[in-house]
Image (cartoon, rainbow, N blue to C red; front, side):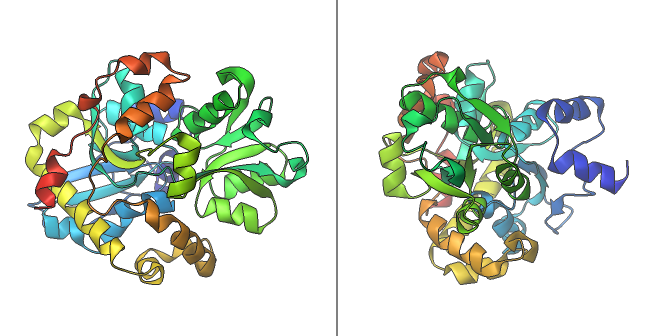
Length: 351
């Protein structure tokens, strides 16, 4: 398969197409033509992790760990593969084509309702890092979440965490799950173009896209789920987001490999907590700036507080995520939360 074709598969197709490619073997975890690979000893165990948007600040620790050389120091050879949305990483994980998925913790609960056993082995953030923005053209019409009914809301993909957060806000505003239309538009330039061309009325998105929309006067923030205080107010408490989740069977079979990964991420989180946004930005690939480094740093300053310093799942947060999802997914109420995350590895990493 040509690199250009592989790139299209990896960076921006629907979950159905990705799943088909995975099952037919067109894309496998051994193919690194368009993945970011940590150079290291060939004796190090190799792990392939698919992330739902490497360039998004909410998923920064995955690439930053590589940029800092922490995967190699931990003794693991990591290949990072990008997808535009978390649900595609979820599909790849379930198909056995990748070893881990970089996405929101809420996927573990959603999958549990479908009989799929996955768990978050490190929790990197307890705030979604998302903002629900509404087109500037609707400023006089949409003033609260009760006005979201009937709108076309842009999300990264159907079934994504942004889709679930959009649904929750519509339901919280007095609507039902089908009272709005989720439109899969990804993030970054594709989402911005959708807003500019009136394909969507609103969007749930992360940084730097949210700041770009606001600075361009294309949209205004309606619900801030990006900062700890405002997010807790909007969601009734903490909401574990950025995490590395893996199939329970993999964790049980390869605890030594999982420990090496968690060691690298905990070390990365601690490094982030002791460095300035400017210093952190300097470590990231320049193409992540989207041509505007100062805007990237501006967005980074706003999002740094969302990250945990130790990688632990905070107390009571899983229960709050369960409460939020069960408001429109009743089956989530019956999930055994102890099987959806573990602090076993982060506790050891922090010793």
